[in-house]
Image (cartoon, rainbow, N blue to C red; front, side, top):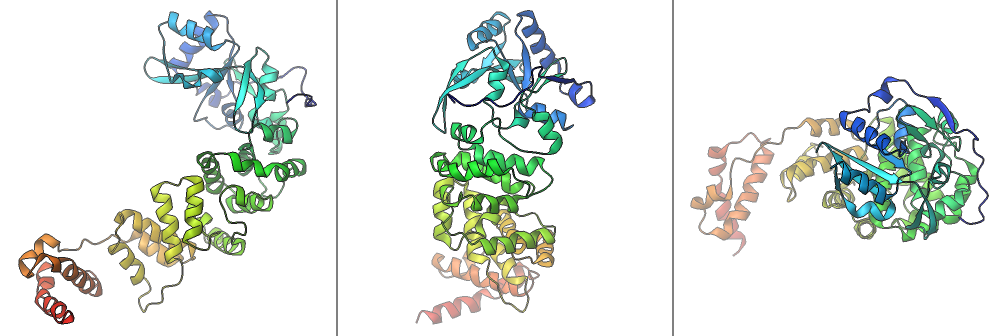
Length: 429
């Protein structure tokens, strides 16, 4: 941003040279080819961002993002001359060219850039050859480092120091970084859970900036919000971070009611934690909601998948106690009678039991092999007077089968059809 005081930085950004197995493990024949091509045309090529962070943590990165001083036009010219296929041209306006080498591996290479104008969601960029300026526009210090293919680590803004301290802070002014893209609020919490070793050691200036700018999340698409939020809840300290997000005022801007059920959330989260149970992100969110209407409002905001929406509704409908002499029976019946995919419903029931802290019942249902009902509608057609009776007769037979612990076979069940048909006729008189 204009007139922003620049953060303190190193005069010499090279802080070390890596010669460790995790670094050498990233080199494939395709990456070696890419490296040689950029050397041939005298364009520097460095790994950028998260992959550098992961390598420094001795983690093999899942994705490699590359940065270069070459412009998109120069890269296209290079790859065309060398007969390298380019794919996914949508990223070109932001400076990203994707090359596919040996028809085996894709590489995204982005021209160094600065953000000229931002609206909290999108940026108008200008290409540069200045590595420090590119590092300065990135979100967190731990994500602002570069690594060249000789192993030199470039760290302008002390990201390595913060990584060593397990400290999560924005590059420079947190307000400026957040206002460039409000989704960075959620990215802050996601990386906090991933990197730190204490769920309550937040940087005060960062939290202050988040509270002052949290309303900007209202303008971020639901899909982007849910992508980050889900990772927060699935990661370490998911519950603690959710509570901190609510404390910062995020609730109503990400689709939650203004007064989410925080006490219930704490009960569900900490009980699962004490029982060493991993809850689905949707299960945790549902504990903040009071009814199906709140689920559908959140679904409208975040665009859940059908599975996620159905799980949330199922939890709302079935999270209350189900008193029964045989406590497992109501949950087995939910699975047997499900109109959804039976495998999905079994997973939903498991989430209900984890939600309620019913560990033994969860273990029982989780290992329960769902029995197959031995009769189909087609099989009983010859035994009923007309087709309209097939459904009601099947329901009655299923209840008998259920009451007999699923041990009654076709021959025994079919003997009940005559009496069921008679009772159904009598009930209509």
